[in-house]
Length: 64
Image 1 (cartoon, rainbow, N blue to C red):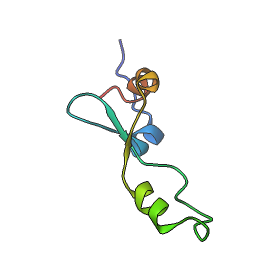
Image 2 (cartoon, rainbow, N blue to C red):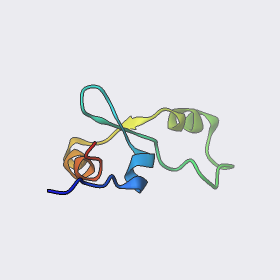
Image 3 (cartoon, rainbow, N blue to C red):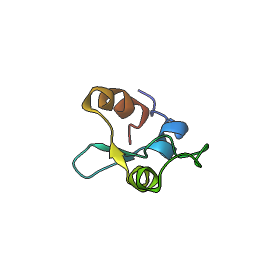
């Protein structure tokens, strides 16, 4: 069987943790920032975890 290729777009968006879960960045942080409160922007800085229902699909995109 040939080697699998890593999906480069997914590799730039997700990082695998030691326990096998995936870290991701929060959305809504790229534009129209003037009306978003500083509290909201501070909360968006922190990363989030990928939901368990999406982990199987991302695992296929990132085999290694």
